[in-house]
Every structure is written in C-alpha cells, then in structure tokens.
Image 1 (spheres, rainbow, N blue to C red):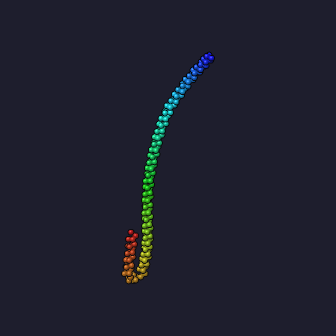
Image 2 (image 1 turned 120 degrees about the vertical axis):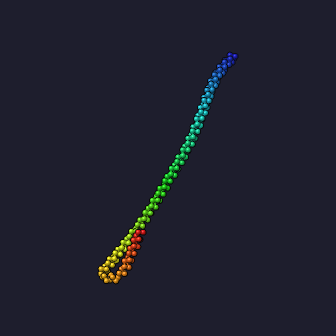
Image 3 (image 1 turned 120 degrees about the horizontal axis):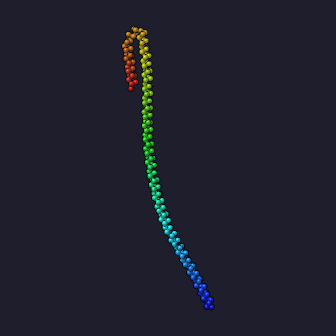
Length: 173
C-alpha cells in the first residue's frame, strides 16, 4: 500500500508540476495579454489625442467658415447697397429727363400758341389788305368822294396802322 501511496504521490507530484507549468504558461499568457492591453491603452490615448486635435481643427475650420460667411455676407450687403445707390441715381436721371420732357412739351405748347397767334395776325393782315384794297378801289372810283372823306380815311388808316403796330408787338412777345 505504501507503494500505491507513493505512486499516487508521484502521480500527484507530476500533476502538480504539470499544473505549475500550465500556471506559468497561463501567467506568461496573462502577462502578454496585459502587455497587449497596455499597448492598446497607449494606442487608445494616442487616438483620443488625435481625435481631440481633429476636433479642435474642425472647430477652427467651423469658425473660419463662419467668419468667411460673415465677410461674404458683408461684401454682398455692400455690393447690394452700391447697386441701390446706382438705382437711385438712375431714378434721379429718369426724373430729370421727365422734367426736361415736360419742359419740351411746354415749349411745344408755347410754339403752338405762337403759331395760332401768327395765324390770327395773318388773318388780320388779310383783312387789312382787303380793307386797303377796298379803300384803294374807293379812291379810284371817285376823286371827289376821296377828297371829302380824307379825314375819314385818315382816321381809318391811323386805326389800321395802330392795329398793325399792336399786332406786331403782340407777335414779338
């Protein structure tokens, strides 16, 4: 029985030695896993710092884009204001041309009024010529009646000259 116990003890010893080897292998495996985990931790920290850097770069880019957007908006507003000023100038020029057009229409109306006056004067001259012709015929008909009516004709001619003078002065104005 001692032999059996001894065999059992030897078997147990070899098993314990096998377990020790297994434990040592397990320890070394755990150590390598720990080393891998530590390496991964460092890589994760590096990645975190890179992500943080990228995040700050993105914020800077966002800020730059916002500044650029504001600047472009300001420039567009400035251009828009300049176009508004040009539009106002064009409206002013249009108003001036309208005023000039109104003045030309007024001048045209005045010329039309002058033409009407000239036509009236022409009509009066025609009437005066007819009267003068009539007077001339009277002179030709009888010398005697002409002598008697010299004062009448003189007054008539004076009135006609006065009308001509008045018409001429009207036509000058």
